Amino acid sequence: MSGTTLFGKIWTAHQAGELPGGRVALVIDRMTLHELSGGYALRDLRAAGERPHMRADQIFAMADHAISTAPDRGPHDSLSTSGSQMIASLEESCAALGYRYARPDDEAHGIVHVAGPEQGFVLPGTTHVCGDSHTCTLGAFGTLAFAVGSSEVATVLRRSALVLERPKTLRVTLTGRLGPHVYAKDAALRLLAAHGVKLALGYVVEFAGPLVASLSMEARMTLCNMAAEMGTRYALIAPDDTTFEALSRTMPASPETVELAIAHWRRLRSDPDAVFERELALDVSELTPQVTWGTTPMQAVGIDGIVPDPADTGDAAARAGTDRALAYMHLEPGRPLTSIPIDAAFIGSCTNARISDLRAAAAILKGRKVADGIRAMCTPGSMAVRAQAEAEGLDRIFEAAGFEWRKSGCSNCAGREGPIWQGLRVISSTNRNFENRQGPGTRTHLASPATVAASAVVGRIADPRPFAAGGR
Image (cartoon, rainbow, N blue to C red; front, side, top):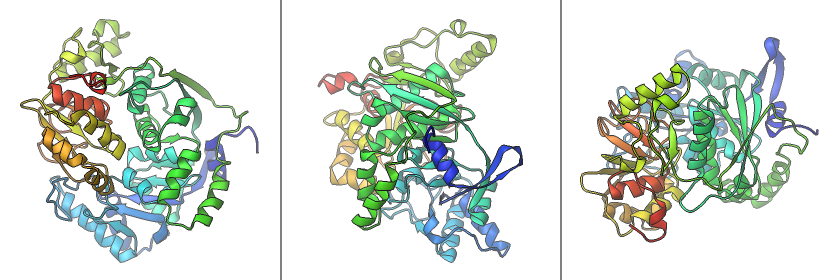
């Protein structure tokens, strides 16, 4: 089969049948469940006397969205409405059905998109769904992983399949080399700033090019994670030796089985003559650390930039959007980004809370203190990341600098950890900055973990690059 995209190969291999209207029935191989949608879906099926079609080896479940990240949390602790009930419901159903459930203090626990790959649950060439918009993170492994709604979660549990329309294909080619303290997160924010939050709407995105080939698995996951902010459910990166090396450390299989699998996975790439329905490119050679000033991820500029003037943003709708964002963020046009004081700094989420993210932040925080009056917090992406960080002494660096050291979970990204960030201006390694995302009145600036750490030390939005040279 020539002239086929990576997406086309996976899609065709999983197509169980064609339906009217260009739709297909797609076989789903694996599913991760969390407490917001998974617990209730399982409860409703059991209440109806149904037995899910998905087998035990196809499901991996954990509570991540509502679970508290407090260091002394209990197995069902939550500060959000009905959170404890949802967590208990998911745990009970998994026990009744024999599904694997990672309890909050297990090393296998974490944010689903961080813990799943760590536990060898994500494989190239498979289909994988979860009731969370950032499921596309797993596309970094060459997995067709995508978000589903609550009703689709129940459908997959019942049928191991979904009816879907085939998306169009978009290839984003990244070239050049990232400079010191410039990361995949910065490249994603630059793409959003240049093309907007609808750049991949209706498409499956394949990230390709020499920069992508040079990225670590963790950086690839960050890039695919941010594809959700580009309007798509699907992101893919062709598996290569970097992928295989990562998988060989996590797959619960014999070395012989892994080698056989790798021989198959090497064929999972777009053919040289494959035609994409849309192509974009970005050279990152001159890219600087990016920070958002507004209330969408596309409202980002380089760290040495200024808050834009609504009069320069195009049509009336764009000006109105900019005016509203500036009013919510309490900012005025023309202000240098690095003059904006912050109240708080947060490192966490499925975007940037892996071990490499914590190492990058700790390299800046080591021997330094968070500025007076700044609340700073780190929630590692999983309990395995937390344990690895503690083995390396990173927890002591964070705490000595003045950061709180928490447990894994999504609560501080999704505004479910109570009023911690209410009314504060937070620089954050997360992926969303819409109004009230991290809590009522919270003003969130998205950035890389290094930029978050540098800003926490300075007390205002700060460039991490001088820290790399031993400055500050």
